[in-house]
Image (cartoon, rainbow, N blue to C red; front, side, top):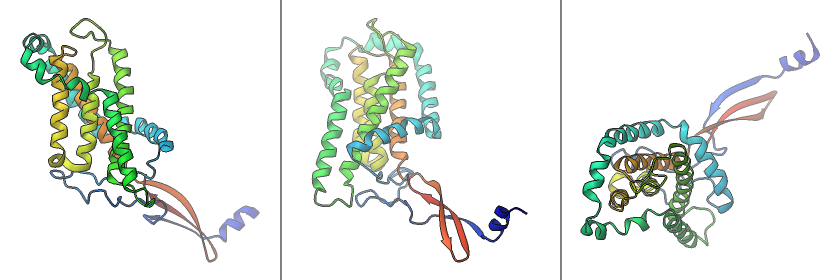
Length: 274
């Protein structure tokens, strides 16, 4: 037996699983309590470990990595893709009956602004700043408004990157003959923001945001910028993005942690927060 083997034989190693305090996340003081599917959504919303501008790039990069790993992403995209495919034969029919109506043009004229990426990010930044001001004398907690604004900013960054990537790949012409229509960027942005709010407040508390997102999607048809199938898939893509951003909060990780004990060392698998 070698010297190393003799030394190791005298060191008892204990392995156990722990959900101990090391890095563990606790819900933010302003975050909602435990959720239910019909009231608050299926996930408890944890505050991210950081909500400062320096951490934005790190968190957004993790969102891109997590997006294809979540089952909800593929379920939502499959449903959206199936509905878009089913609606495709009716694209021209819908356009011919919805475009050119002066009443509809007036009703849906604001949709172009509400679904604009700059408007969405500007509103999110405003929320973030307001939340920071509300807790400027307390550095120990993240205000709920700050948390939501931070999530929407991340969702918009992911949304625009994915939308433009798909647009360039598919290169479907708009009803006016320009490129590129699929998917609708306005619908994706609006539903990404709405799904973030839905994850935070549940369906009952976020229905105005979901209605506003539907309004934005419909406005793209009235404005003759997109086909029905474009906005359907854009809505599904936005939902998947919002679920990914908020769903990552509090996601458990497992880390190895050596702990000295009498007569040897214990190696613990410690469950930590995201």
